[in-house]
Image (tube, rainbow, N blue to C red; front, side, top):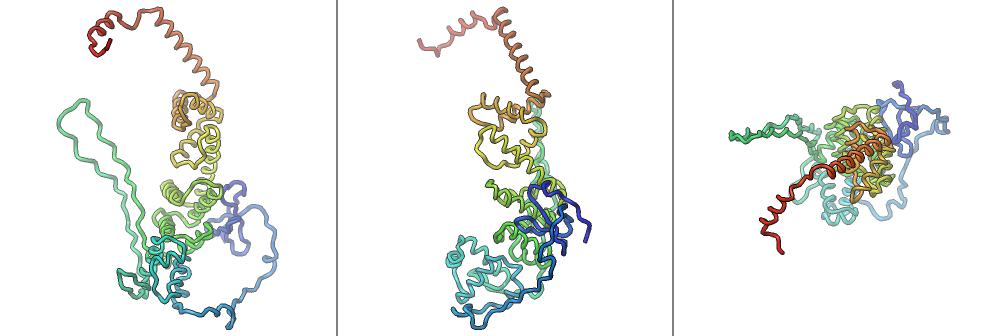
Length: 413
């Protein structure tokens, strides 16, 4: 077993991990989140041995009584390949739908399937598309085809990120001043679309990917849909994130949900994309990112309390904005900016606070005393300027005003 890297339990807000003494696997507190040995994390607090560790527990043997209550309501046939090939490849919903179809003689409508499973009809069609793609079922559009003896290799499209070309040259007509050509926008490429058959084939070829989908259901505490399977597969293949890093992302997602925050897996997918672009490839990199998120979450809660804005989860841009505030200013400065915002804005506005803090940063103001001194200087200069206007030459021409008034035919007497 490779050497473990000690991690303090209190240093990580998301994962509290314990190293299994026998197999070296890492388990997560509360969710039993198994990471891979390649993560090389251990809990540096000595764990007391349990009774199960002191003695070897013999494996259990399970049997079905030949005349037990299981057979009371009759039987129906289940193909052997379902148990031999698809227990790990198919999701729980896909297996439930197939069993339901076999129970009713091999023919059910989408509405009947959706009603029995308690899901929308469009989800029922998506679930059954897996079995159609495997060649085990047929729908109204295509006949069934025999399953291939050897799985074909999925061809994941290789996308080359090419910068967009510039537009057509400007017109030859000279219009001073000449406007600068627009800067090319960064092209955003989407990950490839994967069918249920593609996902199954990839899992057959990559056991780590199959384990990832299984562990993801353990972390989330529920069955994941086909769309979620596609998202996780692309995190590993397209974004090139290791399985243990993806599981840490899912652990963060579940932790945020338990705190009552508004967060969804689409946001986690964007985080995965961002982590990939930032070069996150190890558990240590992911741990640093999660510590950063924990710090910005705490500062966000303080800003929400200061401003009185209704509590909600920050967007990626708001999170970065608050992180910049925390890096450049103290909480006293944030409170002062919040007070100025409340005095001048019609309603609480983070944008207004950001403009105030940006101006202070540009002027080099870092303490409330410096802000107060600048405000006093500004007030004194403004009063002096107003006094000079009263003593000096008027800034208006009274005779010109009279002439303009005589020529203004819009005035009604």
